[in-house]
Length: 216
Ligand code: C5P
Image (tube, rainbow, N blue to C red; front, side, top):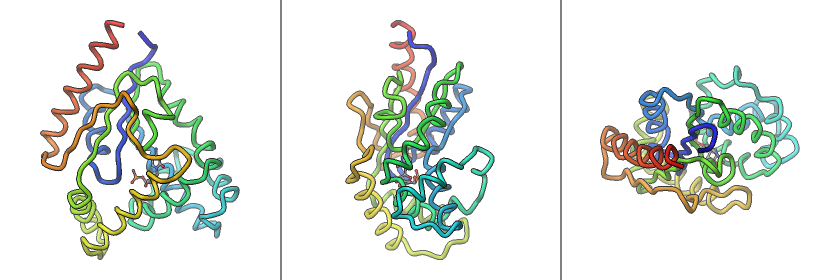
């Protein structure tokens, strides 16, 4: 048995992975790290510092200066922050600067849940439980549009769908830790599922993984 029970929850934007990770955290009493927030923070803080998002060295400096207490800013939840995040996330230097924080979180004695794009492939490749949560671009666009509208952002579903397609292409097409399911991840398509249904399905996947992990 490996030392701690890590649950890796990867998938594209607005697939439901964040909600699933939070709910699994409540069910299993495990701490949850939304790793997208790290990239969002690097994007927004780089812009605030007047740094060019395409400049790997400059944005990596922002990443190196990031600390957990800086992550609570609601500005990191906006549409612009998601776009900025995916632009800085292409830089290997930025990813490297965020690696130790994520690995330390994953290595906590009691176990942990991390959601993102490369948790099962790069951050915690030995995680005993790996989920790859997905949904159709249209369903994801509607979910993200509802979130953004509730936050007071004036944007159309068509614009959000266009953002999602651009972000999917950038996240999947980049050289550094591209978005893709780990070979041993279990796929969970939430397109037709309510959040309760998706949480139940995720829980069953985790239970099976935990039984294997305990027996190993
Ligand atoms: O999950 P969220 O939409 O908040 O992620 C924002 C962006 O951060 C993603 O589009 C992706 O480019 C980047 N990201 C990443 N690796 C992660 C988490 C997020 O590259 N583990």
